[in-house]
Structure formats: C-alpha cells, structure tokens
Length: 121
Image (cartoon, rainbow, N blue to C red; front, side):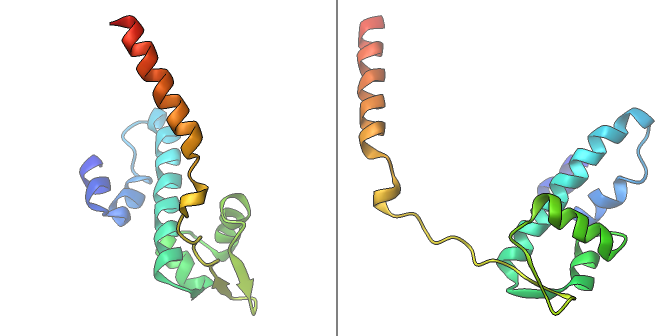
C-alpha cells in the first residue's frame, strides 16, 4: 500500500479500501481514502479548468454525484458548479511576491537564535 501511494497508483489504494484485513483498519483506511481523494482533487484543479460532474465522480472514485457534492461541501468550497453538471475550478493563487515574505520577522528570529546559540556554547 505504501509503494502504491509513493508511485501514485491511487486506483489501487482506493480499491484496497474495500478489502481491509481486519475491521480495526477501517478508521485508518477512511483517513487514507480522504487523503488520496484530496490529492486527486488537487491534481484536477491544476490539470483542468472545467470538468463534468460525471468525470469527476469517475476520477475520484465516488459512487454517485451526491457523494461528490457532499465532498465539495466539506472540502472544496471553491469549486463552482455551472449549468448543473459542470465543475469550474477556481484559478490557482498567483505566486508569492517579495513583499509577502515577513523578512524583518525572519531576521529578528534568526538573530535571536544566533544569540541563544552563542550563549549556550
């Protein structure tokens, strides 16, 4: 299962969710399946501008459109449904600017760490 995650074989990981060796693995598999679906959703947002709901259900391995809509309400509130059956993904955020980096705070923290390290040594 770990190898399948590492190479991105999400279909096999999602299929493994239905055949756990013991009932106690169920909670772990639920979290793992949510994580895999989140990764697939992240990839969909980057790869597609729009997509039909049926295609998203198929790609994310949901059983129905209602399950996808429930997932969207919980995790993807930025996805927009157009024409009743078409998903429109919000554009990705623009790159960070130099002004967005808290440089003075970083410098202050670094100097504090250096002073503490010097005091310890």
